[in-house]
Length: 220
Image 1 (spheres, rainbow, N blue to C red):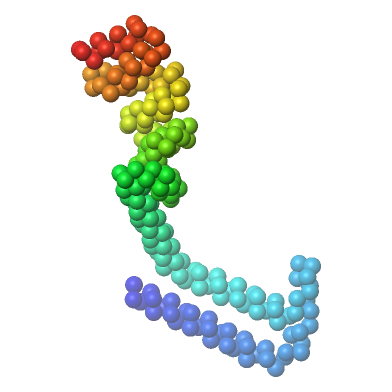
Image 2 (cartoon, rainbow, N blue to C red; image 1 turned 60 degrees about the vertical axis):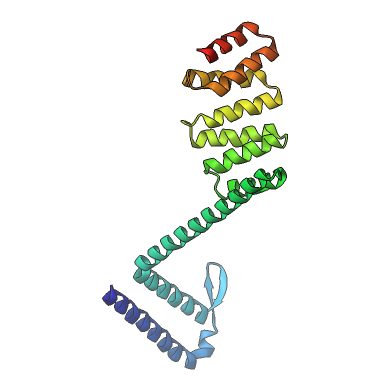
């Protein structure tokens, strides 16, 4: 690795020497170099064409020499950016959780939005955002956040339960019923919370037989 760096240094030094030589050769012929040339339909002085071609050559040479180091540096920069992004998102998430505990719900929503925008694929950020939005009376927006969480982790039943609560809040009983029934079907013996809400929903809708069926499942 040291030998490669030394060869790279020598190559760059050689290119720099060539640049100095070019300047030395061109200075006595400055008047001639001011003559225009047609380049892609534009009038460019000869010195500009020579300098541009030489600069392009140097750039290609340096890029070729340093491609490996450049790739490594780019990887490190991406990793650093990603790490800082995650840290910023976690700080926003922590602020939101603290604000929610202290019933500062609007501040919580703002912090959770920040976390979700920094890391759109973060499950916790989307869930917290949706829950806080529902608590502030914005259930329709909560649905969007909880649906994102469900797409991020389809095997998790928590977003489906949250969506049922969102739809209940909005009065969309059919959507809420569908979500609750899906939770019960997925876990017949463990879906105590969904069954209770399903029973309450059916009683509210006047579906006494369905409410009684949910009650029996709770007692079994």
